[in-house]
Amino acid sequence: MSVRNNFRHTITASYIGFITQAIVNNFTPLLFVTFNSDFNISLAKISWLIIINFSIQLSIDLLSVKFIDKIGYRIAAVTAHVSAGIGFILLSWLPYKMPVAYTGLIISMIFTSIGGGLTEVIVSPIVEAAPTENKSASMSLLHSFYCWGQLGVTVLSSIFFSYAGIKNWRYMAVIWSVIPFLNAIYFSLVPINTLPTGKEKTSSRKLFSIPGFKVFMLLMFCSGACELSMSQWASAFAEAGLGINKALGDLLGPAAFALLMGISRVLYAAVSNKTVLEKYIFYCSCLCLICYAFTSFSSSAYINLAACSICGFSVGIMWPGVYSVAARDIKYGGTKMFAYLAFAGDLGCICGPSLIGFISNRFSNNLKTGFAFALIFPVIMIIGMTILRRKKVSVNEQ
Image (spheres, rainbow, N blue to C red):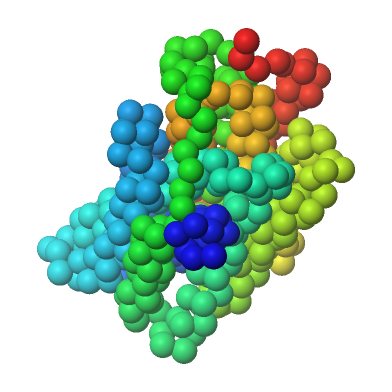
């Protein structure tokens, strides 16, 4: 069966789409310490890079409520990947050409963030609309490719930095641009369904009038904060906070985090028929709280790194799990529901890492203090899941 008629290619392109998003969100954090030393950019300004990245993605989430159904899934997916590819090309040279390197970084990030935001909004409904049987397993497996992308970015970039030198990081940015450009072509060829149209035109007001939807929004916020607070700062924490060699720190910190996060998502996909998803998310949230506590208060560098790594397993099910429960319970939320959930998740992606950066900057660049303040996110996650489990809130539309 040709590419144009086989939905296996659609799923594969979607997997690569999440790899692209992983490159967008995780390549630049590997360079935070380099930006600090080469361009004299403070941790507070680096926090603003995180804020800009996810603020743009958050804006795309909101705007997509209006335009994605009008332009179509295919155009949105292709545009997302082209924008991400352009952003990586600009990142490779613009900071060196602009009078202020920080401005060059921001302009580059605008393009990659647009690509990442569109990818996040469009890929999940594309997979949800594809003819697959176990939707929650498919969604968890899809999101596992974000983890494999994060792992690949960290490991391959670390290998490149070890042999070519961190000073040549911009060439790695060009290499990473190839993936979104090629996947843009792939998405232009594969078959794409859209979500059901019968009751899909659910108004925003009606969505927010459903009590359980507000709980899902809270959970998505905390999912983004729990995941990105650790993953965005793990490399800098290992390198600057713990004084560990960069290559070793990246492999034991963000790379191990990504590996265990991917294992968590694949594991759930394998046992989804035998597991209550809400209960799985609750126990993982408890594990996440423990990991943040060890990262914040343990004096051992290797215990800190182990906690960073295991945290990847704990957050793995959060984002795709909340997506799946919401899609199951809100039958006709459509693209609009996914966009709002992505908005809440990206808001968490902004608040979590930026809180750590600003708090750490205020306490003499002490990242452990920043992680201590971030304990609030897994705590709220546990409370939110308790509400869903105990009250059994019904969110099905009548």
